Image (tube, rainbow, N blue to C red):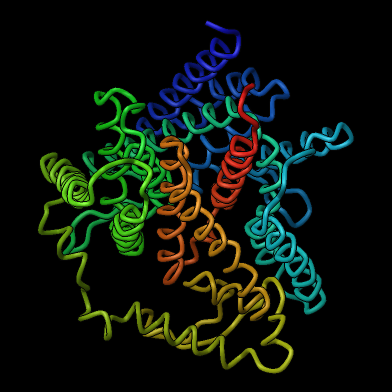
Length: 477
């Protein structure tokens, strides 16, 4: 076993131990004690100035812990309230900056999505200035500073992911963290108690935290990898429980945006798979096998949740409808539509082009609340961007993910590598999931997983760079 493999194994074992301690401390409602006893010393030991370890720890904290749990140990610096994952992200950027004089980014092309991220950050900077100049609430500004500004992590991520061994280690941590997050959801659901656990008359138990957005992305990548690179899969004794845990967490969240995004992503992947001619598999077999596997996965996940007595299949089916009518008359949908119309009406003249700045507020009637409210957040990422940065910001921001989607599809169809094809397919599905879920929620703007969203185009770009290098190598004489 090489030194790198030993280091990776030690790191993974340490993360698992820390994860177990955090799970036990959360279940026993002694999270702070668990952190002080083992997590903090373990984290300090693992980091040791390694950017890969910093990134892995940041991902693990974001996916495993809820926002409320992270906020308990936050530190306020100026207008910014910095959580542990925020501090790790800042440290990661600093380590990257220190390497720039050594030309660490040499040979790494940022790609079109990188150019769009630069444009988005420039618009974001101007929007920040406008928000401060307009006297918008500094709390709202600080929240969006972190959400939007974290897309800058695309560039340090490119640097870290340029090492293939680092890619494998980071993916392992992402997968383990998502499985642990799903396990926590299942424990909460089985016990029927815990943070953000409540019951609805028609649809039963629901756990309303935001981790399922991250679980859905990791699940899509994992399914993509299994779909196209089945021979190099992990043992089924690990793969199946991991899928069931992540899928169970998504079901228990009862978030229709994620459900719809997953179904749309898998349907799009199934269609895209028909255009790939590299695998020497007959079309009829592709149709039958892929549809059978997708259906079996969905049935297994729902059956697992139902067999544990957490949520019945009838509850899940009821959630696909609404509790206040059909989707046209559902109050939550009407509230979003009214909000969007209000924002469009409010963006007149120059505001339509560049928005109202960070921290901007709007006032509208909310039928789901039954009153007039003045708020700064929008249920819908593109309308949130429109409020803060105008149509210019919307076009650039939307372009980042559309370009990623198109590039992922192109790489999937063209590459000879089944491993790379699986990664590209997983990213393709994950982006579709995010775009769909962001239609009615602020997944890409107001939540705390910006680093994970930036990870997708960065990972794709490095796979494209490796593909080009392999294709330009001259054959041996």
